[in-house]
Every structure is written in structure tokens, then in C-alpha cells.
Image: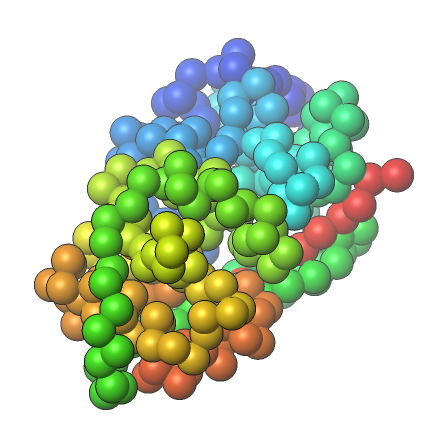
Amino acid sequence: MDNIKIVKCSEASDEDIYNAFSEGFSDYIIEMKFSKEEFVARFFGAEGNQRENSHIAYDYERPVGVVLGGVIKYDDIKTLRCGTLSVVPAYRRKGVGRMLMNKHEEIARDNNCQMLILEVVSGNDRAVNFYEELGYEKSYFLRYYTLKELRKFPDRGLEVDKIRPEIIKRIKPILNETHINWQNSLDYTDKLENIQYYGITSRSNLVSFIIFNKKGKIYRMWTHPGHRREGHGVALLHKVIEVTGKQELYMSVSSNAGISNFLRRFGFTKDNLYQYEMIRPLI
């Protein structure tokens, strides 16, 4: 593979980056079809990848692989997150993926990151084994839940009002006590469009909130420990159903027994699909 050249994505066209991604995921176990515009908006938008921290592999002029990276704060640790690694099928097991991940690690060290993180879908054993060879370990499970019918609970008469995201950020130190996956973090939802923020206040203090989109996807749900079992959860979920007009709701949860039990109590069922969050510390 002497003819393989690795360059930063900031030196490549979006067309080449998109083609490397699309061809690399053409045989993926989950359908990954985006237009070029959707791909750019998502992967260089809310996903937090930066062109200068990403690399693309060329075989002469042909794009054959890409690794996207974004420097983020994760669990209050400066981290380089791998937004995707994609290698064209004909170029797998030839060292292209390892070359790209070596460049990915260089970016992390150049930016004084303390950790590397990525997500892998369950069933993709080849990818899991590859990342473990690079020193990554499975650290969290990312589970997906679906609500098709909300169980009936007493109405406590709680007022759920629209709030500004800035109010949630004021209590961020409390929220950071629990691990949250990147796609449910405030830094992620800040970059999305049509996101709704609703909350419950007590004595002018925010004690409960929910973040969701109009398709019924819930990104974050939280109640202050001192106000749990007071009906906040059901009030928040009713608000989502009222605003979206959707009876079917969705939420992902990262290895949190408390939240998982809460969701199941309200009638959410766990999907078969899940992901591993894999982490590698940098020394």
C-alpha cells in the first residue's frame, strides 16, 4: 500500500470525504444513507467533528477511507472523539484503517487530549476487535428505548413550561455527576435545530427538565434527587406528547441503572440494538 496517502480533511473536498464515508458504509449492518448535504450538516455540525482534526486516505486520486475527529469536553476531560472510521471494502485488512487511526491519535496528542472515545454498534465484532487491538476498552453500553403507550399515573398538577437552554446550563455541575453519552449532552443538542426545552420550577429554581425534538426523540430528562417520585417524570412525558402530537417516543441511555429503571417503569421497552462506548486513556 505504498501508494496510500493520508491528508487532513481540511485539505480535501467535501465530495471526497462524503464518497469515502458512503462507500465505506455501503455494507454496514445498519443502513447509513445520507445526501452529501445531510452528511456535512450532521457530521461537521452537531456530531462535533472538525475538518482540521480529521483525515482522509487516498489511493492516488481515489478516496478510500476517512476518520473524523472532534476535540470535545467529555466527563470534564479533554477528549478526541472519533465520529466515524470508514474504509472502502476493497481496502480493508490492508492497513488503511490503522494508518488513519494512527493519525487520529497524533491529533489527540497534538491537542493535549487525555482520552480517546468512540462508539461501536453491537454485532460489529470485527470493529470491536480492531479497536481493542488499538487499546480501546468497552466502558459503557448505550441502550435505546421506545415508548408506545405511556402507563397511567396520577396527575399531580405540575406546571411544565418552556425554558431557555441557558437555565439548564446553570445547573451543569450537578448534571455532570452522571455520565451522559455525547449525543445526549448539552453541547450536542445546542447544535441541533427544532429542539424543545421544557422544565418544572420550584421556588424559582429549576428542579426538572426534558429536551426533545418534534419527532418524539428525547435527548435528556432529569429531576433533582430531592423531587423524585413526585410525578415530575410523567408530567414531562405528557408535555412531550402534547407538543409533538406523537404517542411513540424514543430515548437512548448510557449505562445508567436509575434512568433505565425509570424508563421501564413508565412503559419504555428496550430495543435489541445497542452500542458500546469504547475509551482509551492517553498517557
